Length: 323
Ligand code: PMV
Image 1: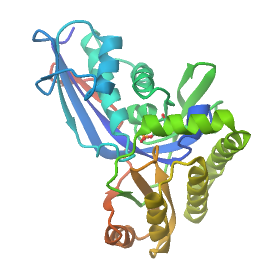
Image 2 (image 1 turned 45 degrees about the vertical axis):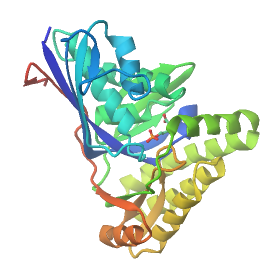
Image 3 (image 1 turned 180 degrees about the horizontal axis):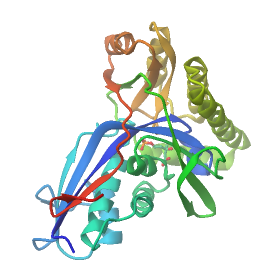
Image 4 (image 1 turned 90 degrees about the vertical axis):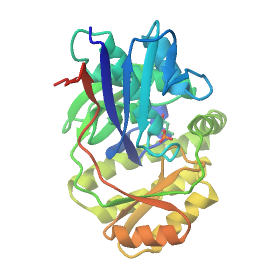
């Protein structure tokens, strides 16, 4: 067994299908070049994170991973390059990197990505009280990923995850180099609260279930439009997805205002909130990233130009990278 292990995992943007994917509808997401890294070694006399004792209040995601996959002392060092609670998947990147480290410390050789994806999904779901494997799958796999309830004949299947009678098949999607801008409202979104809010709506209201189905229905069109390079159509579908997320009650007035600002900037194809909402960020598909970024920062948002990254989780053990 290795004495120490280190893993790095990317954040993500959800282009289509957040919330609906929790109910088994499809989603389409991209890994980005912001990353979180975790290193770990079985030393000391307790579990510590960046020199402090593991605390259920501050280390919810790490705690879930540790409870499932570790027994004994552990020293973890975490460095997050994914802005926290911004809708860019900081918790998923943390869960993936932590699970990758814990599984690797207990293994003679490299750990299969599917195993890391599954372990980190369970950790995230328990920490959040409900989740889909979307964020943890994209963070594990890197690149563009479609999750769908059944295998898509024209796409490569990465792996399949089943829980509580729902199945998600993860597929590789080749996404062209899309010009994307993420604009953060500055107000942190609470994913667990938003997932619970949507659950109440969907369980009590048939209209809520129709909205979820309509969001899922946008994804096939988006995959085709991306394959055809039809960015105008992708943008139109993003705008529609935002309206539906607003109907679900997860778009704050601030998020919708930013979507409108982005929509007026030269070169914008479309914009929507990304991630759980209730705060967090929007994502903009645009031909002119600088124009969108300027308009959005003039409107008070913190903006990031985001680049899709093909690199998923990477793991090293005793200083040597796993293949
Ligand atoms: O808030 P984020 O970036 O972790 O995104 C959550 C995405 C949801 O669909 C709302 C929840 C999930 O687990 O899929």
